[in-house]
Length: 324
Image (cartoon, rainbow, N blue to C red; front, side, top):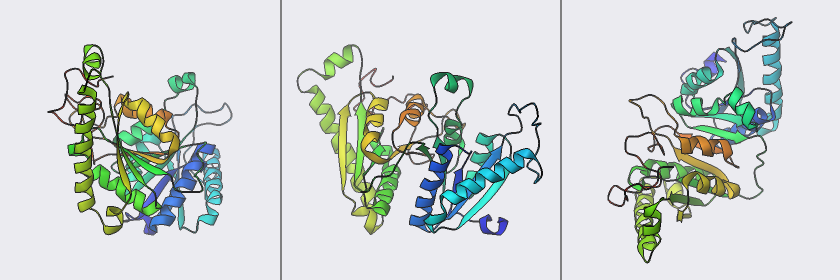
């Protein structure tokens, strides 16, 4: 297996954990591997610091340990779930903190896929999800797949959430590439929202329409630049620009109801430390469809000094707009 993985970037990593969400992640990753001809690598991480059962002491991933046996059973189940995908599958049982290990292992891949199991508010408070930490620190795009996600019979649109049009050319290129691979249309979504006195100002007379027109012009220019830098297949994708007056997280989650994939950019903030802003975390938690967080192609929705929610350019930014 080491020979298969070493030096490979044409590899898609899926983290599994024995849950329905883990199986959903494996199936999604297998479909992506089949489209791109990549190797599918299934990983289960044994957390040595997780509270064990009274009769189940903490143990490494040795073949005869109970944790090792459980891990291999989980990997075997996931591998069985993707048997019909026709892709090359490798597996690995690793020891360590799951979020840290998965973020590190993702450096060997082009994409990391994790499942998102529905949890109650109390569960989220007591046991935090690993999705946000992995998305914040992985050097490659991460996709979170809801446990209940079922692909449609026909390709549905790929939605790219845009905060800053001028800084999102690479993000739009990613959307064009994904849409071309799937034979799906592309939607570039920009949501803007103000509060207090600015809400009254921007919704009186022609101000709201002027704001929308300006945002549409900027997004259309970004789309044109992305098409020019894309492959012929990606450049020919049917794409539309959509500017809505709504709170950003709400607009993105609502768009996820009819999408095949929601793509967001994630910048590096706090002087290089990985950070996922509140909007991205909310959408990651509530998205109906799979959501891809890209670590390098666009600024985060929050985190950068002075960044605001739903701003397309410095010139068009009203004071106080956007921060939720």
